[in-house]
Length: 285
Ligand code: NDP
Image (cartoon, rainbow, N blue to C red; front, side, top):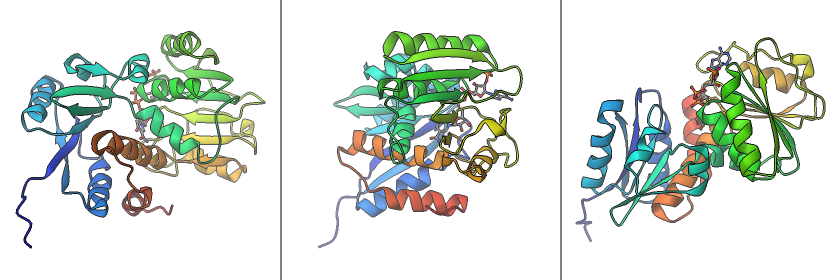
């Protein structure tokens, strides 16, 4: 019997620049693997065109879309509903369209958490988060909501770190403090998890955030949000000191899995997504 339904379900991403975002390859491989007739369209959308793009997705009956930089805050103005964690984070990167209503979520921190949980539960753990941008904020909120015991937010612009620390103390049980990053920083003894959520090392294989490498202890988990290159200098140095390491691809895959579940109402299998990204970036899972 010939398939006479030529209409694909539409999803995608709005960002600028969009050309180096590999999510499309991972999602389309997953759709094919799951046997779903769906497309993921990676769209270059400048800030001036965000409203038109959102209206276009509605008009074409897309079932959902991701928003990456620079739209994660601006998109909130066009949504009908925003999930609780996304409200706390103050940013949306995943929108579902249900009955013509736009519902915003944030999968940045949730994706990180799902990746972290493969190696450790953050409950009762002492954490250092490097950076205080959008990714750091989302990761810090989810770690706080997951029961982290203490969190030190380290950032060049101290005020941004203070804002996150205040937010974590107000919304979770975690003890959070902010530290300005003016010089090379030492990771305090007793820290269990270190997360690089800065863009230091993005696209640059041999660039390292200014931390004292001798302060990385063997029992620590060192995670990097940077997806490209996956094995950053920080992770390579941490690995050579015996730390458990987590790269940014795990966060990307888990964001894809969470987004797919929000859009299609079913769990996708991770290996095909991991393998696709692994092939693109030349790493083994
Ligand atoms: P932002 O631009 O919002 O934040 C960047 C952060 O990096 C800020 O804290 C900034 O400090 C800090 N920073 C940048 N350069 C320096 C420097 N030279 N010295 C000290 N601090 C510096 O970006 P995002 O939060 O959106 O993204 C951060 C990283 O996370 C990126 O590499 C991105 O690729 C990655 N990411 C990964 C995802 C994944 O799924 N794997 C998802 C989302 C993001 P300051 O505030 O002082 O300027």
